[in-house]
Structure formats: C-alpha cells, structure tokens
Length: 417
Image 1 (cartoon, rainbow, N blue to C red):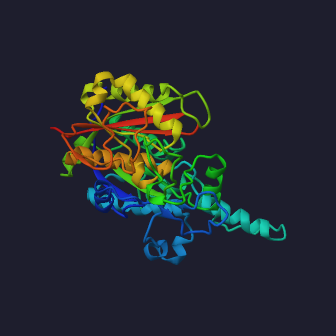
Image 2: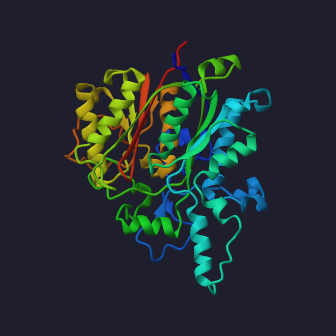
Image 3: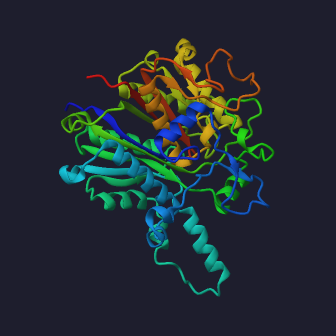
C-alpha cells in the first residue's frame, strides 16, 4: 500500500503572546515573554503568583453569554484556534466530503476549571447534589473535538488524545497516520489547555514543578540557564490543518510545509522525572526520523521540549548529543516555552506551528531569558539564545514529553512537488 503524502494547509493559535498566528509568530521572533502576575484569581497564598495567561480574551464576546457558559475555557480556546485554522486553509465544507474530514484533538487535563467550580459549589452547600447539567459535558477531555465537529458538520475520525504534555503532538501523529493511510482526507488537529486556576497552580506547586521567581516573572522561564528553577504554566490552543497532498492540490490549497514523520516512545523510568540519560527522548527522535526516512544530517532545527526544569533540560540535551553526534553542532535548538510558558496538552500544537513557520520562513525563534551559562551544557551547541536567527531550515523536528514518561516527536520539511 502506497502511503499518501500529508501537508499543512492551515494554522490557528491562541497563545499567551498572541491571539492569532501572525501575532504569535511575530512575538516569538521578537522574543516577547508572555509571563506576568496572574489576574484570574487571588494568588496571595500561592507559592507561584505568575503564569503565561491568554490576554485580551473574553469568551462571551465570541460565543455569546449563553453558549460560552456551556463550555470550559479549554474548549473556548480550541474553538477559536480551530476557526482561525479553518479560515486560513480556506476549507469550503459544503463543497467537500465531510464524511472524510475529522477532528483529532489533544488535552492533558481538560475541563479543570469546570471541575473545580462544581465541586467547590457542592462543598459549600448542604450536601444536596445541585450540579450544573453541563458539568460533565463541559469537563470531559473529548468534548473539544466534539464541539469542533458539530460546528462544521464533520463526520470523519473524532476523538481526543491524552498523554499529558505530549497530547497535542500525539494528536498530530494520529491525524498524520489516518490521512496517509487513506482513512481521511483532512483532519483538524492540535491541542488546548486551561489550567491557570487555583487547582492547577496549587497542584503543580505541590509537586515543586513550577518556577517561584515571583520577583521577575517575565524572565522566569529560563530553559538551559544555570538558574532555571521550574516551568512557567501557560494556557491557550494551537490548531493545524493536515491534509492529503492530492486533496490539497485538487482544491488549490496553499501549503505551508509537509509533515513527513512522527515518533512515540516511553521513558519507563518515573511518573514525573525524565530518564537521566534521555533514553526515551533519544528513542522518540530516532523513531520519528526512521518514520520520515531521514537521518540526523537532514534536520536543521529542533524545537525542544525545554521546559526550564533542572532535570528535563539536561536529559533532552544529552539525548540530542547522543543521537545526532557531530550533527548536533550544526543544528539550531530553541525552546519557545521561554516565551509562551508550558501549555501542557497544547504545547505540542503551538510548538509544531513554530516549527512549521521556521521551515516556511527560514528563521529560528529564540530561547529567551538566557543570562548564565550552565556547565552541564556543551557551549558549542547552538541554543539560539535571546535572538532569532536566520538560516536555511529545510527540516524541523518538534519534541514534547509528558508526565508518565510519554514522548512524542514530529518532523516537518519544506514542501516540494
């Protein structure tokens, strides 16, 4: 069976540094930090008082008050990003076979705000279970692709992927495979997350996972810096329209890049800590390269997981050096989480968009907030510190790793006939 080629024909983003793709991309290149003090709840008693929140966004302005209240914020974010991607791809659904168009969406946690609100209200009451009838439909992880499919009347594959911070990337890989196997022609894929609330911040603080740099939130996300002290929580969404090449060409679609491979692996090491030598990270990059039929010399840029945690950054770098050898020193490496924070289940989606645009525009977004070299990292590696760098980007790889040891990696290259 001959596998179909898969291309990217539309992008959508709602991020802490831009509420659409052009604004997000320009902010990445400019090195803008999305971190600031949290405005959505009172952080007086919290260890971490800042995050990368979505800004200038009101769901009621978009959906109306009645409809907005039927959806959790992670669904609001998903719907907005998907809508931008659909418009960007110029998908004319009435004239397409919607039985062959699907939605595969990632989320690591889902409707946490809904769960928090409903259980808190119950706890304050007299024990009578007065729950909102939309409680369950707002909370469940699979509801985001459900809403998207209903809006556009799409009857193809429809489900959610859940692999913590790798969820968005796993959604892209599943979408890629369904299209190249001929099960679908087009899939709206990506991920969304909304965990900046009392439960999300309190839970991650209890794990000692978050930065506590309350004196300087804007520079708190410091991947590969000696003084990094944990990740910065982010929220938002990213959407990618994946489409078979023949379908895209038949309708005259513009093409951003070609998706050529995806890999998955498990650390099988610890529920939250990465393998100290990066064995799972090395394996997932190897699997993605093998799937794409590429070698390490073909990769020009890696958008790394790079969360700004003491152990994670070291582990991933060890994996890159071990796998790429001499080619590691020809790469550009960057962590866009230095600007967006960590969007958990949405991270893979917005970082795939950054990788796709790096391929399209031949420029690598930076790793900002680098102040002090860490002797753990080889100084000859190019981490693209503090400033975007122009270079030929034929092929880019994007890594995402999640609690539970879930690893996923995707590869995009310049589209050629």
